Image (cartoon, rainbow, N blue to C red):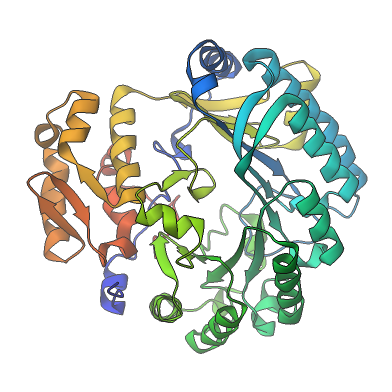
Length: 460
């Protein structure tokens, strides 16, 4: 695969969505509430989807013992682990309310625990949570069952417990191995600790091990990040998620603790990304798309080769495009042609459940245009190709007329070598995969009509 040049990376360093959904979550409205969500659940239960299509479940665990300054997640900093016991009781209520509307025993092929820090829960707490889920849903063999792990909160013994509970994929938050960077973001974790945990995870037999990295953090330089990449190549995880740090202190209070002068300049960030692409592809990793790399034999890389890649609120997935139940404070779900989000504060989340209500506070019922554009954007993001006839037959539109303005914008991208415009469709080039987020933005009706992109992170 052709590696992107620093010049091209600089040209496309603009703000834009990550397209874990379309329309994006900033378009959700409070007019969509619990009744709309319940209707979607009931329609799923009464329709054929409940039997034909498996569910995906996301559970948000908001608690962390310490604050990472770069973090933009919905989290609660506390050392009082008894708060997790209370939270589990409310999760149980939320699960019961779901099954009251969509029935028990629905098939689940994908489960992800995110946060916060899911491993903030004790072993008994994790057992309780998994027991709850298995009482209400059917977790099938061969599914993807993943959990985000803070290396500072686990040891080999805890990893064995995770395997016993059915988790087959781990995601370790590393971000950077450099001690100065770790100190600047208030997250100290020696490389030796991560190496030992990954070795233990391999011995236990987890199907896939992911490592998260972030470039653009304070105190980082292209040279210091090169050293982290060398250690990552030695660690050789099955998957790597390489994210750009988005410094938005006006939105995320913890980021105000970061010294602005310590942040690398834009040119240094571009250099880090360019050198990372070189290093990881030279090490044999497949660029799956938008931040994600995988070894050729990993299921994610295989899915991309076979055209089976999908995308949901957790990112790229090998599982079929399916409904997603979001559980916990701030969790986002997708059922049918709707998106929904739970209350963002623990107080509001608890209060709504105390009243016997699902904690939905906002969402969106998708229009026909939303559905058409979602199909197009996800085809670009996952398959890197659009087949015009397929879109026309699925949605009964004249593609070239419907997307005339968008096709005009793609002409310039073709001249830059990012896409190939063909009589039967659009294909993302090997170079274009590095800018697939920017290509997808062309088809975003909301973004094209609203040029205020400050709420989004930069795509590089």
